[in-house]
Length: 124
Image 1 (tube, rainbow, N blue to C red):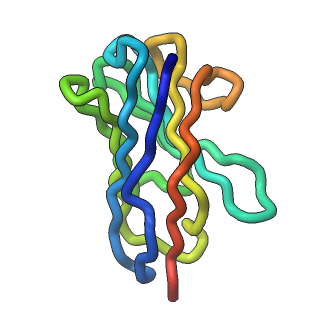
Image 2 (image 1 turned 90 degrees about the vertical axis):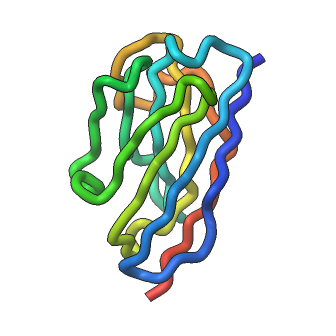
């Protein structure tokens, strides 16, 4: 059974940085495309970033491009989201997701497994 556990959320001041982690178990991690999504109160789930199985390809939403970086450590079965220049608009619950495929995926329906999320609150 696949499990994804996010960590690293919390309260951060505007302009600050935060790194989120997502530890995976139950599936061959290195053969799975991974993604980060977020959901703010009253809003739909939003794609943030994706990375393919070997980490050689990444893709970002325009809203975070240049500020966020997705990476992975296949030896640790963990994917990361490094966030810089945070603003109040980045306040949300951040979820990681694992696909059954090995490529880049941007739609929630392309991911088979989801973590429960970690909350990031950006204060001004």
